[in-house]
Amino acid sequence: MNQPTRSTVETEEEEVSERHNQRRASTVDSLENQTGQSLEDWAEVITENELSGFKPIVDWLKQEHGLGHFQARLIAEAYRDHHT
Image 1 (cartoon, rainbow, N blue to C red):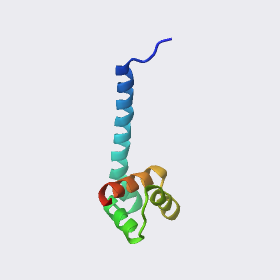
Image 2: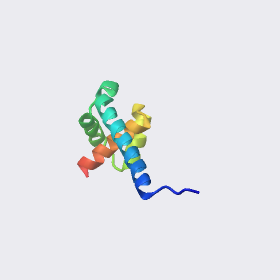
Image 3: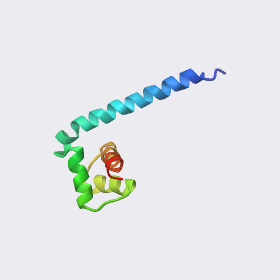
Image 4: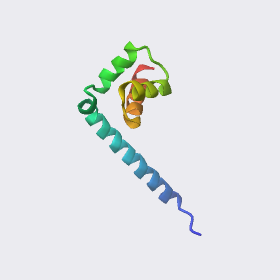
């Protein structure tokens, strides 16, 4: 049984990370077009509603605004990274 070499595992992890980064960038690019609000606008909405905590923000964005999971996580991550 062949076990993956360390370099093979690292390469696969890098490819997954790169795909994630590409999807994230694409979502950021299309967010305003799809929702009518930019990441900055969403940060203001979160602040105005006095939300805190990553999961509660994700759940609220999905339930109250009908966002997809990836969009909601992206917004919550951006908010957390810039407001905590």
